[in-house]
Length: 554
Image (cartoon, rainbow, N blue to C red; front, side, top):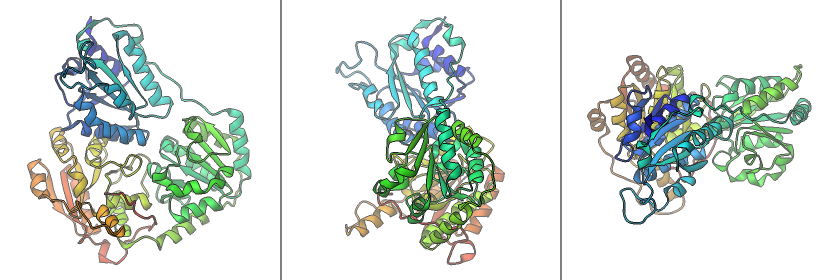
């Protein structure tokens, strides 16, 4: 016999869970009885929002679901924002929480952490929320969650357990002895053959690769080379093709040259992308004629019919579907338009980027090139927006941020820590603005407590600079955007970090190389007004892309 809390932890181990993020509370103590000595690592954030962001970063780097233990009531309302970001970006996250027990659940009597219906709240930011009424349900519910993570569109799942149930004695069941495995769905073979025939005869095919295609990077690269097709990578799809690949286009899908490329193409193959407005802008919906030449591949059949209706929709796993397409297309000598189209788009875009955007992309290029294998984790801030405009990531799962989808602030630091936990042998850099950092500043203490190296780029413009610019453009007197800026050096030292500054890309390169080699926790503060490109030249030595900064960016 064991308690249900212990049973839950053992069940998580059956599914390969290696760590959980959470803050212990009186309602979750029984979960910790099972966690101690289980071999599952526990990481304590300073706020439940931080737990969710850490789980998100862990999932993006590892490809495995991030798992959180969260208390009733305020724990869930705190993590809801992080779940919203993960929901918007299709990130697998398992949130296990407690809920008040029968008799107190929804009573309105004012019990500790009581909400009228917390599961209803969680349904707004999860694929599903389930209340466990009997321990016997748990195996099935957990299997549902992991089936979704591995074989459907991966979004957060919430499972809540009444507090008193965690201490109940339970027996190990037969189901508990095995891990339920579901094979990802495959697209219809006949439909694949039909689409492959269209791709073979297309003279100007264009591949659009999104975040749902990161697991298919090798297959997409092979298909692009066989067709001589450009690959336009969305923000969450960056790195599917490496920076030097002549068919890779790491630019904003909302930029005029990207849309012109879509116009010029005679066939569009969109893989693992929702074709959403934070990537493509609302202007995509004005181009309904794209649908006649659009083929979509997505694991979610509903998503195939959102945003832009395709001529053909293949519902299935991205990797399996692209591999099937590759197998159905015979190798042949193709002149193709790919390399020339990519070069043309880059040349057009190079003249549209502002000096500030060019410099910020140069900074990201410097980080990528100075730290082999680096994971760059961004918040919502100016360098990240510039990166979304045209930064070419070194590989899949190596550049992600909160500027897409839900678009929250405070994400970068805790998500970087989650990424560091997932990849302890890779350097990780958090890219924060001075405003966004103050949302989750306390998570610097979590990094120190774990005693792991981490580099933070702190882009300081003394407030919410992008909002201020947007207010000025709208002829609104700036208000509430020039916030108090603390002494970040003193804060860094107080949290057990080192602090330095960098005035140009050359200095930045030397600093990050030394910090990574020495395994330091380091804040590199960059003054927006004083930062220069390499050598102080007026333009940064980087590919320069084009996209206007989001007007709601902070």
